[in-house]
Length: 205
Image (cartoon, rainbow, N blue to C red; front, side, top):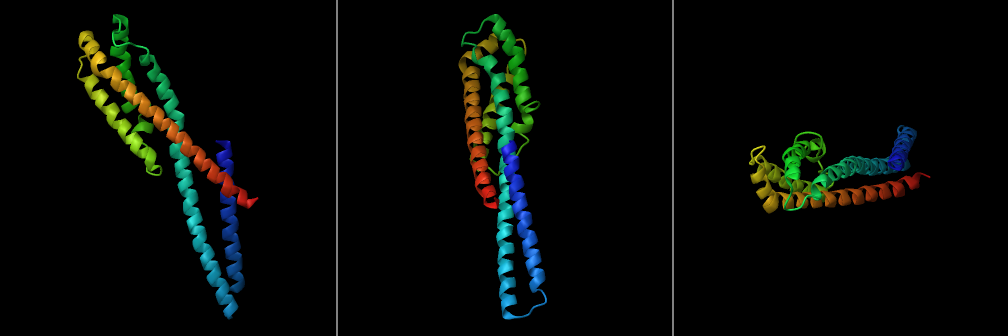
């Protein structure tokens, strides 16, 4: 992350230098109405337009960094929380069913409405559309699983065992696989943005 911040700072410095240079140059030609001055001002106008594109790109990279970092930070924790359920077989013991009855419901609440919800449901990933599509699918799957689990009355372990064996375990695995895919894509995109920042920032050296 420190490298990314350094690269962004370099881009900001380059941008400020461009602005200051354009302002100084325009001041030199503002009172000169010769053809050379008119041509020079036109060139400076083109530089200004070019900088506007540059600035938009920097803003996009900053948004992409934020969105990728949000997922890269939260998904490993979510997957670690999921792991406590991954070891339960299709035929859980009574103790395991008791744990599922409490902890799986809590996990769904954390994912959708509590601890993880800000990253999964209240963050926009529109600047990285390839990940946005994945996160939409993830949201749909986890909402569906939550509805299925909510249909089982708390404490009804026999019904929970039947659902775990037929749907819940498989659906939970698919969601965890989706989360792994999203994490991988977010890390790849983050590295891609960092590489671009490195390349552009090096232009100011």
